[in-house]
Length: 212
Image (cartoon, rainbow, N blue to C red):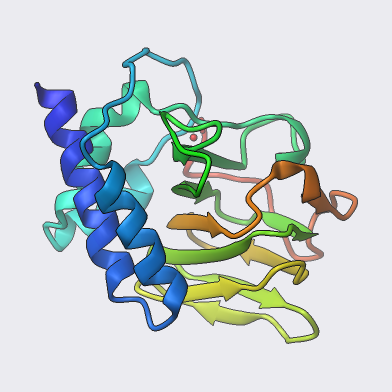
């Protein structure tokens, strides 16, 4: 029952935040969550090296209910930490797909979940057919897409990436935790990323090691 309660709180918080987004994709994501909220994952305990304590600390100070839900669910979250998504031997970027074709709960209409990005880490320019909406829970990161210069996006920000828009992210002194959703053409077959590289001023991770 504790996992089921935490899952319900997590999705409720996700829907509540996205319903307040200033773009239509937010309301679309919230509606999909509400439609699927009664479905539960099959709970499997998963080995991973993602540590969320530093990312959750600012939310915990605000008594954000999403903190307790994520802490309770952490042993069963299906973090994806290897492959083209990560450009280092250690885990510096990771995501969970809560709902989607490869999600903890299956849906062919949407992908959504949570994204973690370590301090001093660069996620190179990439693109996909899906329309992507991020909501930053904690940390400030530089985001850019198309020809825009990098713009710092603090906690509470929404970041929208249109279909096939190149976009990249870079963190500095703190890790990032964000909710994300894909709508439209959500096939991963369209995903591509530029050659992995370390941003010029990036430093090796420190306080958040060991890491997802």
